[in-house]
Image 1 (cartoon, rainbow, N blue to C red):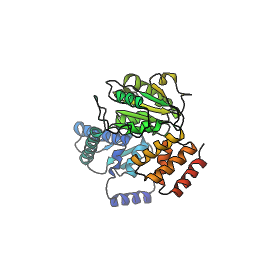
Image 2 (image 1 turned 90 degrees about the vertical axis):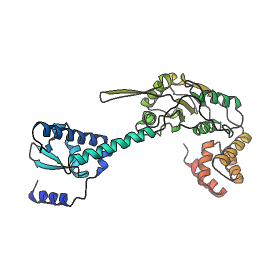
Image 3 (image 1 turned 180 degrees about the vertical axis):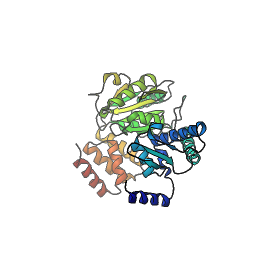
Length: 338
């Protein structure tokens, strides 16, 4: 490193405003800083009260992560650099950094406590539960019995578009502690991450037949069989008990593992006829989306004629405020269908 570069870096550091505490949000960086503080405090106790430096090997840290703490977050500074060694120190007193870490981790604990958690016993069911669905009174009783059962009874709704699958899942979605997932569009960490973050009483999975991630399937198998979520990575193993009911829908069960299907109470549904479909969609749009009756009827008729689903009708209703806009968005929807 040239003399000019060293001077420029020194000037920049003198002008630096403050530490960028956003590094706390990165678990790896936060852990490295904690190890550095622990190392320095140990050296101060055993060798010298003024000890303030460390090297990468002292805290078992990768050099590129230390570099981020130096140049991206202004937490550390380089006090000596040679061909074989780089020595680091904190930009601010370690007591200040330690306090910030403690405050951040306490905040995380508080947020963890506020996450929705699974509960046992009966759950409050709205008086108008199932009112958007025409017929299927026996399935209404089945769902209520499952919701209030002491142990999970998982239900899978199977049928082509135009059945009441989506409406039934939408009714479950109204319940406290329900989390909705569309298979294939969850986060990179998948269903395990959703379960650990939200701890849902009810996990609702739309389009289960599109669930192709082996890890997601494995997580579901364990959850539905033994009410456990297992995390095993980097020599770390832990499991969390989770009393979660799974309600799902699928257009077809072709391709789904037999062991997964075996864990569900399977319900096969037939499509509504056109007249019933129009009534159901119209009722859903007026009740849940606040659409005026005339426009709701128009959307319902169009969706029924085009063989689309209730959820398609909801998507259109959320965008279109006139009949002309309904036609426009339906044309776009159909044009780009597979």
